[in-house]
Structures are given as C-alpha cells and as structure tokens.
Amino acid sequence: MMDRRTLLALAASALAAPPLAAQSGQRPKIGFVSAVDRNPQHYAAFETGLRESGMEPGRSLEILERYAGGSLERLRSQIDELAGLGTSVFVTAGDNAMQAIQERAPDVPIVAAVISNYGNVVLGGSINRPPGNVTGFSNLSAEMAVKRLDLLRKVVPGLDKVVILVNPRTISRGGRQAEAYVNSAQSLKIAVRLQPLGSRVELGAALRKARGEGAGGVIVFRNFLFETRRDEILAAIASAGLPSMFEERFYVERGGLISYSTNLVDLFRRAGGYAARVLAGTPASDLPIQLPTKFEMVVNAKAAKGLGLSLPNEILVSADEIIE
Image 1 (cartoon, rainbow, N blue to C red):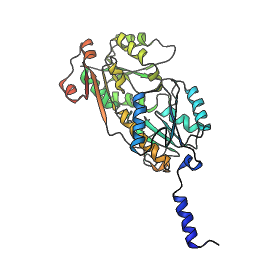
Image 2 (cartoon, one colour; image 1 turned 45 degrees about the horizontal axis):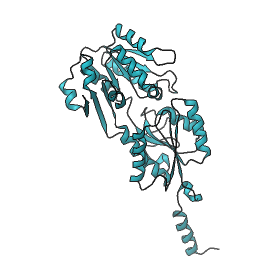
Image 3 (cartoon, rainbow, N blue to C red; image 1 turned 90 degrees about the vertical axis):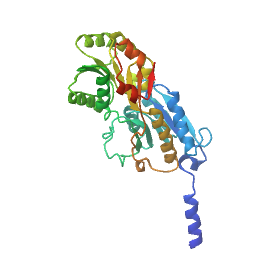
Image 4 (cartoon, helix red, strand yellow; image 1 turned 180 degrees about the horizontal axis):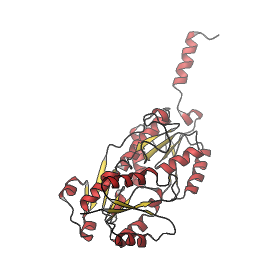
C-alpha cells in the first residue's frame, strides 16, 4: 500500500505532465486547413498569436498547412490525411470547412478563426458553451448585413434594388448570410435579386442584365467559392458598372467600391491564442465563441469617381482607409 507522501508525489507528477502529443515525446501538430488558397497575412497573424501565448512554431509545435483551392472534395481528403498524421487541433476559417472537419475528424478539437453564422454556428448549441469540440471567433457576417446595405445606400443615392451573389454549392446553401441580407433589405425597403454563381453562369452578362432591370448595387459576402473566383467577380462587376459592397477589403484594394467587415487579421491572431490554450490542455468546449473587437471600412475613391458617385462626408470621415 502506498503511503500519503507517495500518493502526493504521483499526483504532482500527473499535474506536471506535458499536454497532448507532447506526452509521447512528439511535438503537437496543428492542422491549419482552408477551403480556399493560402493567405499570408492570415497565416502570419495566426503564428503571432501562438508566439504571444509562448509557443514557437517549428520548435514547440508543428503546423501542417493544407489548402483546398475551393474544392470541398479535396478539403475532406486533406482533413483525413491530417487526422491520420496525429493532428492535435485543427484551425480553420468558415462554416463549411468547420463542418467538414467535424464530419471527418469528430474527436479532434477545432478552433475556427472565422465563424460566419453567429447564433446558429451550423452546429447548434450555445455560444458561451459551444457544442462538442468546436470554438472560435464570429465575424458577425449575418448580423452586419443591415449596416452594409445602409452604407451602400448612403453612397448610392436612391438605391432601391440590389443583387446579392449566392453560392449554390455551399453546405449551408447560402444559409443565414443570404437570408440576413434579404431581411435587412426588406427593412430598408430595398428589393433583392439573388444571383447564383455557378459554373454555367456568365456573371458579367447576368449583372449587366440586372442593372438593366434597375439594380443599383451588388453585395458580395464572404464565401469559399467567391474567394477562389475573386478576379472573375471583380471583372463582372466592373463590366456591369455596379457599385459594390464587400465583406473583405481585398476586393476594394483591387477596384471594388466599399467594404465593411471585422478585422480578419485580428481574428486569426486571436485564433492562435485559442489554439495554444487547447494544446495546453483546455477543452475547446471551455472556450466561448468570441465576438470581434476590431472593424474596418475601406473605400475606393477612384472606383467611386469612375461610377460617377460623390462620396458623402459621413463616409469619408468614418472610413478607416480611403484608396485614391
């Protein structure tokens, strides 16, 4: 029979045991996966978050990167591969990738740097107490729909009809994002035309037709399919001469009119901190899904001039960045 001193020593030894994969003498592995292509800024921000939490990529842990380029089939295969390599925690962005990981690797914790459907989270359950093995950060995509429409209406006088791009292939089938824009538009007395972006659709012709039928603007929300076809979307919008609102600054830097969004770089940095906590032994379900704390509005003054629009002083004063 063990005496009290031996039992206390064993308990202390157990408490001091290294977390997760480190217990086997191996560096823990983070599976950093994306349904789209690599974004160097987002990845660098994630590494910064890890370092701020005392973890050094390449030394105290290993990051395995995988990018699916818009293919959900490839994404699922990559998730299977990483799970087979002993991934300790998955880090991703977007509801579709998050759900794919849940389906393929249900026992591995997930930190989602960007969750679009705050409230529903395509998962069910409570925000403060996420279901199962998922946690992360909301970008308030659906909740900010009315704000984006109102901003576009301030830039485009008399705006009463908009086109909203939707992805017919998404797991959530456009889900709460599209629904939020439709409901917000109705509250602002703006008519909506949903325009699917499919392989058989010539988007430029569809948008030119919509403009001819009275559309005064186009909305592009964040979606993995749109991210892989950004150049096509921008070219189609330019050919139609439609004022445009986006959820990502990328488009505005390349000729779009205006974006209003959470600061995604900051969300990826915070995701690094969450991943570090999971690797240190905190269950994902003990980490509440958090809201964004940083927002940004980017306006392209050159694009506005090309569309014959005069930017209101309210927009110029509140914009975080104006591209001349």
